Amino acid sequence: MKVLHLPYGSPMIDLCRALRKKGIDAAACHFDENRFQFTPDICLRLNILSKVEREAYLHQYLKRAMKEYDIFHFHFGETFFPDKSDLKQLKQAGKKMVVHHHGSDVRMISIAKQNNPHVREKPGWSEEKIHHNLTVLSDYIDHAFVQDYELEPYIKKYYKQIHVIPHTIDTEQIKPHYPDPAQRVPKVVHAPTARDLKGTDAVLQAVNQLKQSGTTLDFQLIEGKSYKETLQLLSESDVVIDQLRIGASGFISSEAMALGKTVICYIRKDLESKYPSGSPIVNATPDTITEVLKEVVQNPQKRYDLGVKGRQYVVKHHSMEKTAEQYIDVYQQLKI
Image (cartoon, rainbow, N blue to C red; front, side, top):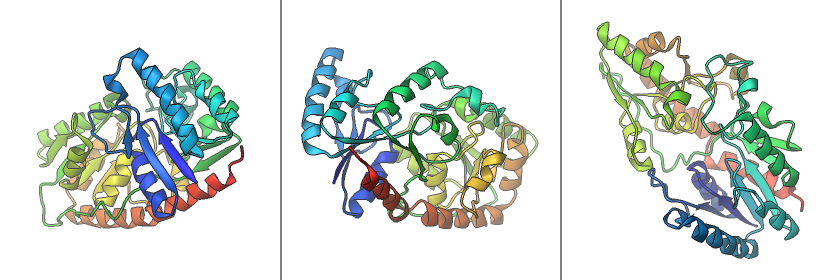
């Protein structure tokens, strides 16, 4: 069984490593280089080509890939070509396919707002675009993956089978560095990929209010850094603020917990019971972040305890061994 993951994204890298540990020949392929400097197994570097050259190269690569791989695992709802004409070619060639949705590629605001007053729409992802994308994908693909139950309602009417599998985290490579309970001035970090979507305005406002009221903390906004640099800064922190608007924990929450950090993130109340028991994530919204952050900042022992619990939680629910088996089970169910 040979599986090709494409066309971009950090989560697929650890996932492919996890699958290889289980004996599956899996490769993570990124089409483009980017500022995060991820290290996939394959990078086509299409970003250095013209539009015409890019299209020609992708046609050639698709032909080679169809000869080499049995399963094509698409991420973020994208395939080889923008019009997704490759899906028909892959189907006719007898290839098996799955799709992996991660967030804004499926989050329909009209549905999200039913349970989340804080959510924002990602520019360029209208409901019309999302609906069209899901319709085309589900015409050829029966199985879809998402990492949590927040995403399930957006796609349940499209795919025959939906599989909710938590983020895959390499807990062997990510070593914990727990907050020092003797540290009175904690380092708090926030690393948004999109400020409006993550509630960065509320984070900055909360930090300023706390500093003005005499609460001491060392805050850093992480932007424009490579993935390696970001991970290092997370490792050096005590508290990591993920997002305050989406309503579910992101990949950075899982990585931060693996690093042994206290994590603050907005989890919708109706979704809390969907997570495995024992989640140590500290819940906060744009309305509550100031008080929540103050309480964490003023309790160094609590930061340490939450960091330890977070690491244990990720090892138990997000480790490579745990998640890889779930993907393999689905791969084995696929039919042409």
